[in-house]
Length: 136
Image (tube, rainbow, N blue to C red; front, side, top):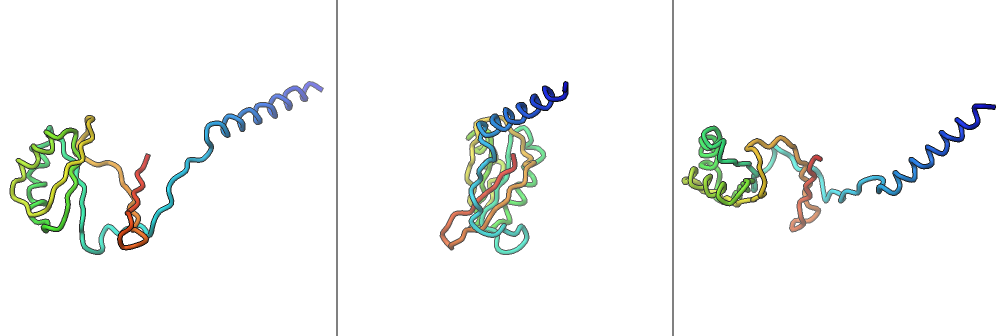
C-alpha cells in the first residue's frame, strides 16, 4: 500500500519532465541540405577558407606565402581574422599572389587553427547556394 505514492510520484515526475521538454522546443530544426556532400579531393578548387591571427604570424605567414603564391587567379581565399587590421597584416605579409583574398572579420579573439570540420552540400541547381553545416 505504501508503493502507490511512489508510483504516482514517478508518474507525475515523468509528465512534468515531458512538459518541460515540449516547452523547451524539443528537437532542433536544421535546414535541409541542398545537394550531396561536396568532395574534399575531387574537382577544381574555387574557394578556400583560412584563419589568420597576427600573433601566429611567424608560424603561418611562411606557409600562407607558399600556398597563396601557387593558387590560380580565379580562386578566392576567404581569410577569417579577428579584425580588419589583422587581414591587412596578412595581405602585407603575402604580397605575391594571383588569387583573390577577401576578409571575414569576426570581431572577437580567435586562433589561426580551424578546429572544426564543416559539411558543404552542393547546390541543387548550377546557380543555387551551397549549404554549410557547422558543428556545435
